[in-house]
Image (cartoon, rainbow, N blue to C red; front, side):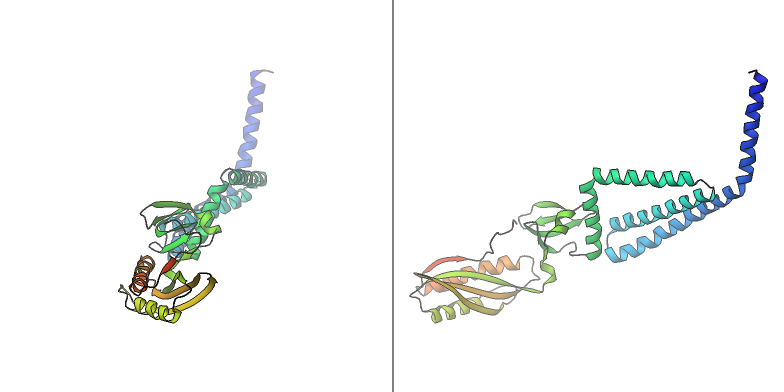
Length: 283
């Protein structure tokens, strides 16, 4: 073919494209208006959702993530509508399919990261604990120092920083000591079977009542739990104020010292004593 024929074909093709563009111009204008309006609406959604989420979660990072996600969803919806106005249905289908495939691939690739993220969001709204709360989870006892979307950091009573993935916290029991205004301290003793049990009880009660501490104890209870010759097992419990950070450790320590002293001063022989629950958590 000669050059003039090629030129004619190209010009005819350009003329058809120009005609199609002019015919589609109103749709392009509408689609542009939709995208511009969606941009400002999405910004407004982000601003409002940030304030609402911050009021609920009390976390700046979580509020930022939620607001950005909502803004992105709004823009994706606007782009889909705009492509539909331009009659690019095939492009819309391809876009949605591509987003689905990419989302599925990322979900498999970042399984742990996404599960920690979702757990962090859930915990932010349910708020099982706050910064400064003393909690027990995943065999650790400590004070919450930082709450992030992926993990939570607590400081144990030994001063160690422990970073726990939110997925592990979400899937396992949590004890929040700050949610309980008081708690019981339980001490288990074994006494010689020849001991005057009534007299021993009175000594232990007086020792506990005279024990000096930041807060008084209450509801002292005695229970004999078994006989294992030549020993009789005794459990002593009392209630303390749970507001003190180290109240449990302090009261337990002072109670053991006071009881041993009272029994020793009266020549009552002790066999064993313990105050721990089985499987003591790491502190």
